[in-house]
Image (cartoon, rainbow, N blue to C red):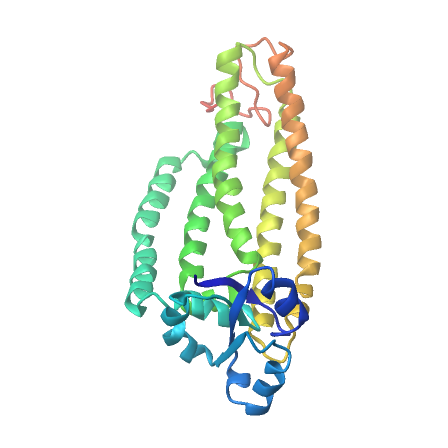
Length: 310
């Protein structure tokens, strides 16, 4: 057997832990990790009063618990490990790994700045002199936005890997912002740009409305931009609250609610953009696109003979 449950609960030991989890899991011991309780004999006695005699309770500070973790993981009995906040649990989860290994992984992440800078420079040099074409070309507008988002996504990844930043943003909404930045702002926007290029060549018709493409782009761009900013700001606020020992865990969670409302607004914008694209794509599938040899531009081409990428 081993530690069956790792639980974060600012109330530490109470009825739900002992009866709700302890009895169904047939728990033989509880490890309570809290710096304050570990230094207070009377608090330890108070918590022991709520535990049946057949269940052992061990008290540790966070630093002592890291050294004791291998012993509890090798226990023949089932156990529960309790902490009062996420920051303490994170220290324990990282504890079994040597410090040099964590440092090496951070250093490796920082070194990714080299390929990121190379790719970003390559993107910029490829587009040099052609940025004005983004006014006309749907494909360029979406893919350039995605390429720029890739650079931002990579830089944010390096930033949140640093210990000084990770202590505030781990297990918060900032991790969700980082995922959306890579999956939507980068990958999905590039895919949309590819669709605007590929579909007319497969179907033999051009996109019907340039105005719908513009609406799709701006709703997507503002939507994912707002979502990323709201979740990053909310994650930092949430993490700062969790690091504050005078603030209850529930209060740190509630502090992020205004930012989640902003995320809901961004979700509406993204939903609108998806419906616009679905409607426009449906017109193409049903053969209602434009019969023309001229691509659908976002804006009227101002100069005759100008070479515009589709």
